[in-house]
Image (cartoon, rainbow, N blue to C red; front, side):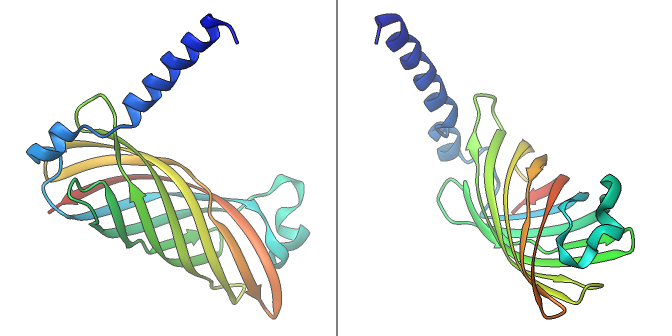
Length: 192
């Protein structure tokens, strides 16, 4: 490997490390987040990526995809001193296009502070129970997600989750089933 390639790799690696490392000065001062508890009110949309057995060709043929409005309150507690790692509950109520889904997952989120003060990117995992009302389906839901938030006051933040992909594994009407969706959320939140 040439010195140019090694040097380029070292620059990229050190830049990524610097972006991913939380600023300890801000965390110690406590100016970024007011407290251990985080409350969010999230609104967004869900679109089916896979139809599952229940829907069949009548609903999923010809490129037809169901879309839903999603309302999702969230409550989480910070697990570390800097309030970067959160564990909580995040119910989701999805309605629209003649179909209703209620998700009750636990959530884990880790805030990674970016070089702009108060700006965070975070990976998130939601996992738990899901009930699909019309199909009489009971599912295990697993959703990896990525979001970004801006802490513009120690008690208030806003953000979005542009990438969320819930997978539903379970059974409906006595048969095993699998379905997938895409979630997009915008939210406002409070730290106390």
